[in-house]
Image 1: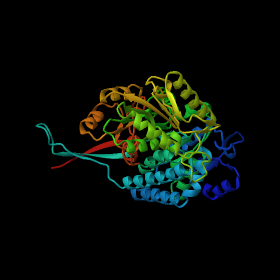
Image 2: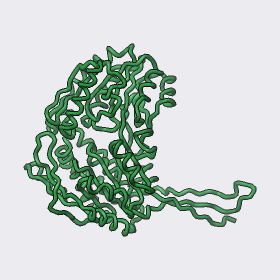
Image 3: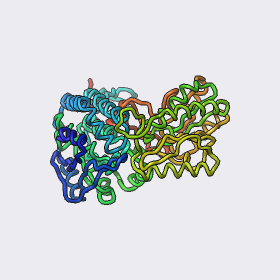
Image 4: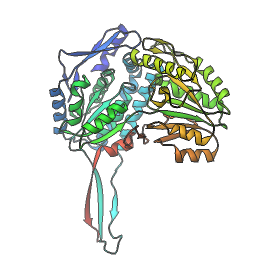
Length: 486
């Protein structure tokens, strides 16, 4: 079990792991190295799967029919949560080592994953059937129609990104277990070790191994098989828009749950509590090194309060401690790699060339990138027109609520948003007119429970929601049957 090997990280020993296919260790001589984004140290390695490996994993998944009762599924997930919590520090070390996220963020992620399994355990106990009386019309009958939810006939294909290497996996597999499905997961090749660890924890908690397999490898070789394999009924993906659209076109006649990118704003109106707004802005921009689909990527601020807000924003940004992710006092670690950090640096320079004023940051050392603040950012420059997946705070000034809504809706994305105001007329208008999947008043865009519906519209997804309850609905077939009721 990989949990027992985590102590190697403290001694600087790499974790060389194999795939988990229906509980069996499967590997080959072709390896992918995982390196620490902060210092380049070798964290571990995983195999490059072949297409035959993927086919074998899906065949084993489809062939298995879970006998687990609701109670048994619930107990497995509660035990998983207990194991995660009992080993939180060591697991967070692994997340920090492979993703570069600071210890504060990686510990928080373990806690969130625990919540996912607890909520899924509770929902597994809920009878999700419905009853309809049929004597509702003049030609009705004395009958009742019942519904029940059944697992999919085929397997679920899951693909997850680097920014939440544990929690994103939990959000896929927990609803799958709760609905008695079987899943094959391919984590990103950048951070695969956390997913392999979770598989071992699930097996330890009593999950039949055929219900969850983890395969690793080069997307160029195996991604299409993850999308087109005949044993797959549903593809669930979290990641960027270009890949999401590729999946939508490739996985023909398979259900798809696509949670894609975001360009989430915090909108600060003239009546806002600016101290609160600036605190939210900093938290929403820099947590997880800004690498969240719901991170604040645009700050749309009313011109009447923009100067004061920006002063507070710069002051609070300067107080953010960043550096070695393993230092428990740091508020921010690295981004995922030097290439990403370099892209942020270039976008900021481009914004400056288009009139933005750099007030703080844009410093880079490899994958280490500083919190960064810009003011007077044009709403159409690349920094804010596209999703900038890092710790950058671009301030766009607006004239009134109509202007704020226009700017917010001007990008192809529609995931989430934050609104700082106390006026009910403003709040109701924002709720009506912002083209997003969720709106948080006086809170960061990313606030949610692991239970609640989550997802976007436009280029942020197909409208299907994640979150434990909604994912469970997506992962089921609905069967109806009727009986005489005289």
